[in-house]
Length: 453
Image (cartoon, rainbow, N blue to C red):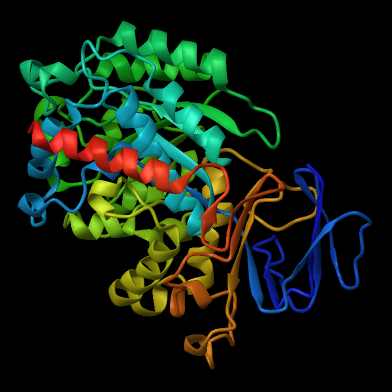
C-alpha cells in the first residue's frame, strides 16, 4: 500500500473533536493511515488526486444490517406489512439460505454500501437452516475481503422457534450449544481487536421473540470472556413489547438487563419504544442504540427518541437495517431521511444535518467500540469518501458542507471510496469484484429462490 495525496480539497468535513471544516487543504495518506492534513503538502511517489471539486468525508459506519435481505426486497405482497407479519412471510424465503446465497447477497449489499460512502459494515446474520452447513459467516468474510470493506460479523441465532412459542419456523432453529460453539469458532478464527482491524466478530442473538433467556445469558458470558461486543434487536415494536410482557413478565429492557445484556459493550438495534426513564438508564449504563430511520418508517415501527438519547449521552449510531425493510444499502440516503424525520417530529429539538452525519461516523464508531475510525484525524485509519459537488443541481446548495448530506442530500454514488488507505470504489466501479459477473450470478440465485416459494 503506497501513498495517496488529496490536493486542494474543496472541503474536508473532519467530524473530529473540534468539528473542523477545512477549505483548500490537503490530506496525505500513507499505508493505511492519515499522516498529515494541511496546505501545500507534497509526497514523493504519491498518487495525486485533484480534489478541488470534492467534499471529503470520513467513511460512514453502518451499525446494523441483514445482508441476506438483498435477495428479499421490493416484494409486492408485503409492502404494507408491519414487522411480525412481514417476518412470517420472509422466514419462508430464508429457509433457502445456503453458502452461495449468503456470499452473493453479501457482495450485492456491501458493494452498494461502498458506492455510497460506507467503509465499515456490521451485519447480523441470523438464518442458519438445518442441514445447510455452518460456513455462512465465513462466506461473508470472504466477500468482505474481496470488496475491501471493513467488516464486523454479528453471529446471530434463533433458539426460540414456533414449537417453543417463538416466531421463526423450527427449520431455522439452533440449540444454545450450537450457537455458542460457532461463535467461539468465529471469534478465534477471525476477530482482530487491533487498531485498523478489517475483521471483527460480535455475539448477536437475534431478538426477544426468537431467542430465550438461556442463550442471552450464555452470550454475555462468552462475549465478556473473549472481549468482544454484544448486540440484539430491542424495543423495535409494540408487538415485541407485549410479547416480552407475556413471555418474560418484563418489558424488553428489564429482561435484557436481567440477562446481563446491558453496558458499554452492548448496543441494540432500533430502540424505538424505550420510556424516558429507560433512555436515561441507557445513558447511565452507556448501552448503545443503532438508529434505523428508513426501516423504522417502512415497517411503521415508530420513531426512535434520538433527541432525548443525545441529551442523555446514549451511545448512538446510524444504520440502514436489512435490505428487506429498507430496500437499499445506502447510508447516504438514511442521513437525509433521519434529518427530515426528526425535524418533523421534534422541530427545534431535532439534531442538525451535521449531527446526523456524526451519528453515522464517530457515533457509529463509538458503539462498535472503535477509536481508530470515525473521523478524518491524523493517526486514524484512512477511511473516507469523496463527493463531486461541481454539478448544476448543487449550485447555491453548498454553503454548509457539514450539514449538506442532511439538508440537501446526495442522490448519486460517491466519486470514490477509500478503506484502510486503499481506493476500493472509483468513478462508478467497484475495484475488488467483477460487477457484471456477480450481478448475473445474483440474478440467477434470486430467480431460483422465488421459483421454489
